[in-house]
Length: 87
Image 1 (tube, helix red, strand yellow):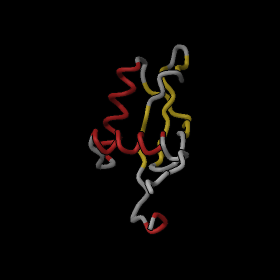
Image 2 (cartoon, rainbow, N blue to C red):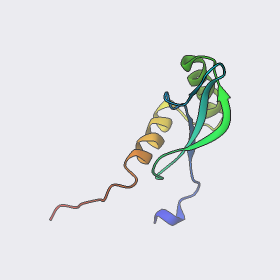
Image 3 (cartoon, one colour):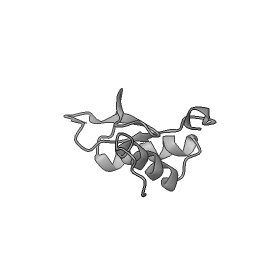
Image 4 (tube, rainbow, N blue to C red):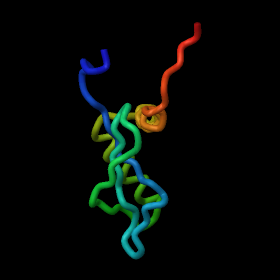
């Protein structure tokens, strides 16, 4: 049962299209099985590579592996798609 999930997982994500000139990249939070992401007030950088490295650090602190992060992000991309079974 989805509502009975033990804990809602989330991951930090750096959308490449949310660059703030002279500062860096705005940080987003992706929630597992929720469509899209939530932008925070945080800015990491100054480069995209620096921002992604910082996201990796924070995701590791959450106990997430690269595969976990990928899974969470993928679940958010397909969260709003209808499921169709085969008959």
